[in-house]
Length: 152
Length: 252
Image 1: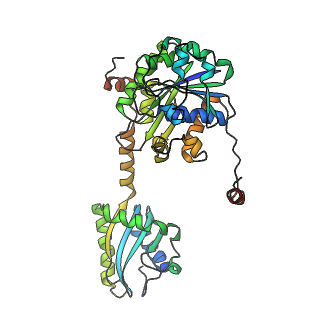
Image 2: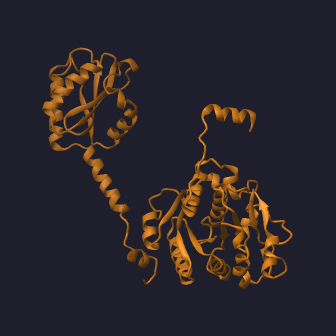
Image 3: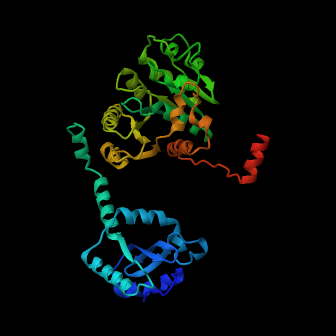
């Protein structure tokens, strides 16, 4: 399931895509992992829509290796920021990622250290949006006039 | 011919800036336009058009000491009736009559009113056909605008709508929708706060924005307002890079 040897972009995309399609059918949002490659610690960021990987990319890799997920590479910083600041893991998802973690442990040659940094859930975004629209909901004319001290 | 008074109730909302730039935009649309400094006690529009040294002003016409046609000056290619910078007595009851004498000469007469709802402001409203309210996104500005709308309608004037000026896009600001609901008026244009507009009244930089930066983003807001008022569209030629380069090179 997980790619062998040195992690190349295409391999990451294909290997984890299959894994996530099976293991994380409902996952939506940004998923970030850190792992140890031959070059040292790297971050892997996946963008998943209900378990289907829409894009994946590795931090600190050269331009040539940015084959999969190049379209969203510009957003790396934003995603990382989101991941770092807004970690939200449900129990089920923690379980799934622990399984992923275990997978990595059993195959130390492939990924020496695979750690889930967090999920930035789309759902959370939606809730925020709703709140925002609630705040911006226009008031009734009568209410505004009363707030300003007018009787009618 | 239409006479439009720009008013707000609250001071500092940008009435003078609006009046000057609306008048200049209407002029650019090919209209015959006159802009009148109706803020007789604090003649800021006069300063904006650099007419503070005018030998005769609106007060002379109001007092019957000069003909109104003789107090029309040309500044930045537009006709302006300035007021005096000095403190002076004047007969406000004749303002409407004096303005009406100029009706056939222009397509639009734009009057910049004073802040507040004192007799100077009321006279400016009485002398006009239509009114535009200028708000900044604050509670006080909205409350004052509601009063000005009521005063205008009581006098039988048509309030065309409001301009939301100096928007900084902050959460605590009054929203255009809320203002529109409270005023029961359409939003004519929203203008974000801009240093370029604020510079208008700096000590050295006095010319209106439409004179200084006619192709700027800020100028487009005033042009949009002029389009709504006149019902006509600007047809500006889009120049390509080479045309712009040659224009700059030869300064034509």
